[in-house]
Length: 354
Ligand code: 13P
Image (cartoon, rainbow, N blue to C red):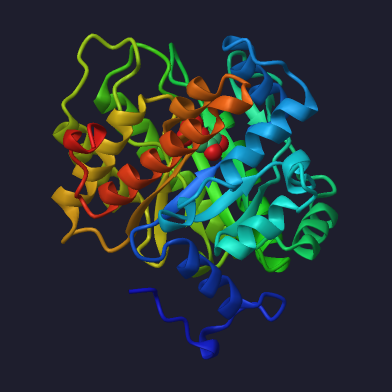
């Protein structure tokens, strides 16, 4: 049940708290989740290049058209995160993507960070940029119809990493972004991501994730962000991708929820995990186990906001060919359905064969 927020609790007259709470509830409704389709042009081009797809505006447009027009997408997807190029694009027939999404009942959102850049004085670490001019950019997106936004910060685990300096600077930027979003009437998706690359253990990922989340929530509090009007988008707690001990699905679920229970205040209405480079099936299986094992203990909605774990199989089928679009759409909607089932704890490998 969505959190009830009473107007008399209001602390910041510049923020329409009721509207934020309603948008957050719409994004977390039932067992649906978010589709991240907000890859920046360089990231989208990299993924296209690997499959021999031309890296052009038109190819990106055609691919995004395939996604937003996929029949049945709205059955499992509550909101779609767009990129600056995509939010301005139209179908071949001239219908704005925004209209297609709104007509389908999918809430449009927008990625507003300008990317993770090398951080001065912190070799091997990144700081996410994009605060300058953000108020004006948010006003433009809100005017176009966006109802929520996303900002991703990344932390790498390695020898002596992450540093406190990198963690705190990213937490601070996330909180300033979130405050500006709420002022603009947009629900901030706050995405502190601990990267999967490396040989670190599950336990190490759990420690770093917990510390990062605590730093983020301390900054959100300091910057007067209304927790009831935001969504957290964290990584699952996972062993590093080259760690010899790849944990079971149950162990991942256990470690993830333990971490969240310690670090996330229950006023936050929901969590929407990123997939972070896990295979599509593993991401669904782990999300399902997280929901199954901890349904009773976890006060928050545990949803998904996947990019690769929903899109990758479809992209591999599409390969830039119009003729492959219907099959790619079916693959996309299938992954969205699997993750919807996972939100109920109802995903099983059988679903992959149906
Ligand atoms: P992945 O699910 O591919 O990690 O992407 C989520 C996302 O939105 C990254 O910012």
